[in-house]
Picture 1 (cartoon, rainbow, N blue to C red):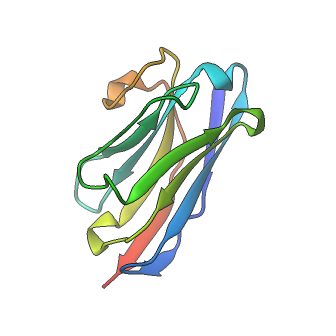
Picture 2 (tube, helix red, strand yellow):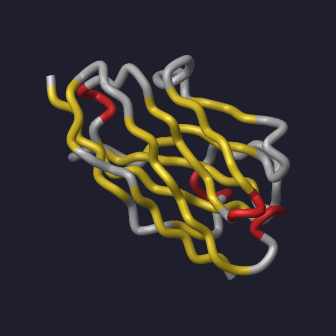
Length: 124
């Protein structure tokens, strides 16, 4: 069982930066693939970024590639999403998720555990 809590969401102007954090509790965190998803108002939840258990592999949605960076600190049970050059279309609730099967995972059904989300609002 893994419990996830996101933080770091805020209101920011376009072009600004934010770093989201996800604190994980529970056993075997270091073995899980971790991901970030987001949901904009009136839209379906979408994949943002994922990182394997070792941090050796990452993958990003095309819409954030080159602007966002996912990272993890296994001894601290933390996952981060550094977001730069933010755009109004990045607005949404950002969710952290854990996948016990490992490997790169872009699909929502791959993930077993989810946080409650943190709100990111980018003003133009």
